[in-house]
Amino acid sequence: MALDTAPPPGPHVPPWLTDVALRAGRDSAPELERYTSPGPASGRSSAVLVLFGSGEDGPDLLFLRRSGALRDHPGQVCFPGGSVGPQDRDAVHTALRETAEETGLDRAAIRVVAPLRPLYLAWSGFSVTPVLGWWEGGTVPSGDGGEIVSVHRVPVRDLADPAGRLRVRMTEGYTGPGFLTGELFLWGFTASLVAWLLRLAGWERPWDATRVEELADAKRRYGGVG
Image 1 (cartoon, rainbow, N blue to C red):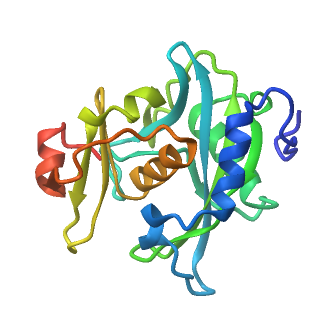
Image 2 (cartoon, rainbow, N blue to C red):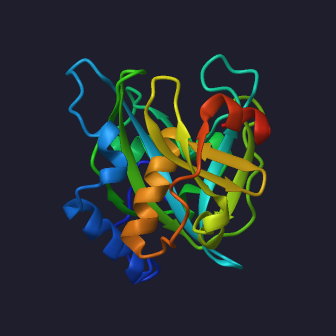
């Protein structure tokens, strides 16, 4: 299947994920309040692929860890994605192309469910469109060896574990969601998307929202990445 062909959701997409996409279009998304202000017309367009999969422990999500040697967001745990290129037809095309480049994941294995609302990252000037996708799972690619040093499939049940949830206070005073799961520490934009989707899917469990840690302290405590 050609890279620029985006198949519609089919019988292999679980109904719960289609329902999440429908709810996302109607939900006020308080977890994403920081990112819902319209960006300027000059904002740089980008997209990320929020890829759910069928794992041994139930549904999981695909994350990347960026190289610690990068100038921007070193060691960050994020969804695959990147800037819209001149060859890209739309945000879906961007998300699929970047995922293939960063992970080597076979594009034909991915079912696109829906692009979600664009979100604006004021500090970087990016307008980011999350694209919801599904794959049946399989061997996890190892990353491109340059910008991406590792690829991880994280079970949703681990992300929903109350023991791994916290709130993270950024340097500018904003406090947002954080997740600790295995060797990964998620915060910022990625963690906010995860928190939103957990709630939409009905997977969120009661957790201690009074657990707040400073970002710099959390990075040091949990391996210096994020």
